Length: 315
Image 1 (spheres, one colour):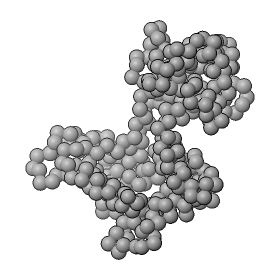
Image 2 (cartoon, one colour):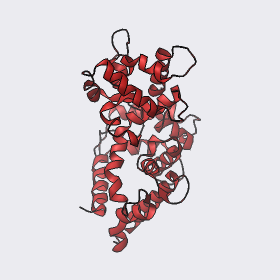
Image 3 (cartoon, rainbow, N blue to C red):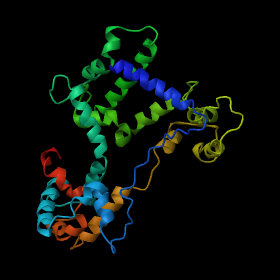
Image 4 (cartoon, rainbow, N blue to C red):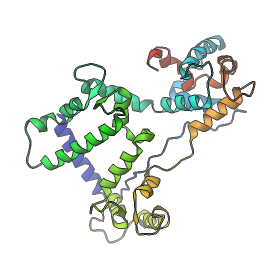
């Protein structure tokens, strides 16, 4: 199946999904919990291990000896210390945790990278992405679908340019990750909001009214009675989404809805690790301070021994 056929299948799948009258579409982006374990260090450090490594991977480190744990942790400290000043701050720990928790995102990009980097030069240009994604259509346009394909291509190019920080229309792997997963990057959040509004704003007036808001997540499909959750969403729109009570959501109101300022679990965990390990209370950690508390870090994403040591040059 080529890219063109895939896009058509996806469009049909979306249409079928929206036709289900009781199925709710959720456009809100939430950061997942770091662990489902209780965070109680007086009982165990299981939460800390899961938060940094993931539940399945953390289990594999139960067999490590203290000596092995300390040695491997010392190696990882150098990867967390981004500015190489010999100290690990809570900011650097937060960045490491967030990157490690988004491993599935990077794995997804890695699977696609070689398909789009056609000349294998280590970057993906807009021309490469366009040719791979829309090449079949560009070679043989279909009048029946030309409008949709042109719309998608224009939208993709706009997002590609937003992800491409230096404006050279060539994406590094990090920029390509931001293009494919814009919700994961602060500087891409405006494009996430814009694309969401374009999807929902059916009359093209630049705002989302109540009917559009409900219509995006619920299709009446001839039903006289709305599900209870639809009534609740109507109330949510009036009471919370439409903050200025003008009957519609503008860009900022839409952003507050789909990209809420959730509690930052990674930042809280980083502060916790620094607090527990910072022996001289200077607000940052040395390699020795971290290694001395190896039992707190062992099995965490910060000590992702199984992969970080094998691929340490990638971090």
